[in-house]
Image (cartoon, rainbow, N blue to C red; front, top):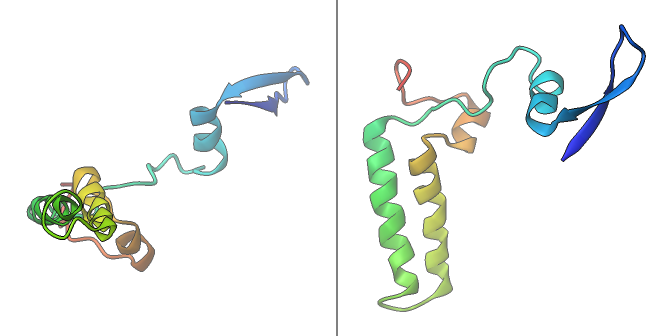
Length: 96
């Protein structure tokens, strides 16, 4: 995906890569938006719980409700939780 941006010195329009565009426009401070906010032990618990819930799709009741296990699995793998960020919560004392 390519966006255009006006270059002030030349007055021409030049394409920018999507990642650079987001960094300049949406994050002017340069801070990475998805900082880890989940402690490593909590991450391990989330991964195990996510896999256990996800297994319900294949064994046991074989219900699609087991797909909800994707949520804790993803937050555990990424180490980042959106509700934690929105509420300003971090279980990491330092940079995990």
